[in-house]
Image (cartoon, rainbow over all chains, first blue to last red; front, side, top):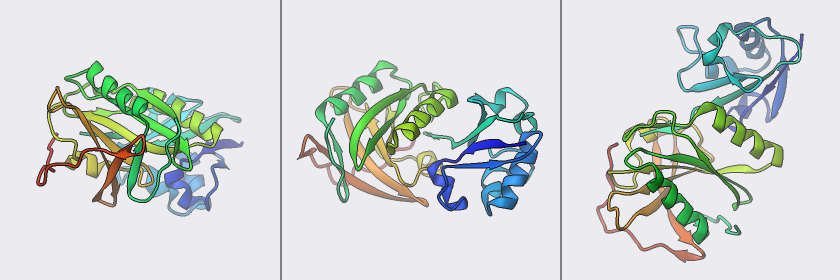
Length: 91
Length: 156
């Protein structure tokens, strides 16, 4: 099962500069584990110590924010596109 | 839009400069935010992004609107040149929260201050690994008025 992942500029240091990578997983957590094996450092950039997504990382499946789905347990299907963006926030 | 970025300056054309101030005023006293995109420092697009926090002291770009803008930049092979937000009651200087949450080291952080409603102003900064370095804002090729010495802090 192939999931396309759009990688933002700030995380391309983990993907040898690639803008798009692919991975496998029945849900987001599996995909991130798979990406972590393929791209060193990517998993820790996305997942906090408690196993959930970092608070200031936005992850989208087919342009939908996973916070409004099942977060890191959001199911994935072949052909889905996952986008990652660090939040833009401040005071 | 035809400005070119160079060195430690941040170039804006007058119309974008004025648009940023208009945007900042449009939802005062709440903070507004947005993105500036371009190629080789030339500004190509200005995105107003809703502030999901709709707060006087915090902004958090609406995730879906931000994704749409970022995808358009990516599709056009534009770079993210600037990230802007407003400070409605304080100086145009990065707050501790701004520094802590500055995840986009390649972008210039632009702050529009409405502290003096009659004299809004814009300052620009590189924020990399917690270090803040100011850039000179250049509008249509002219350096904006220098800041009074000792006017940095802002704590929203």
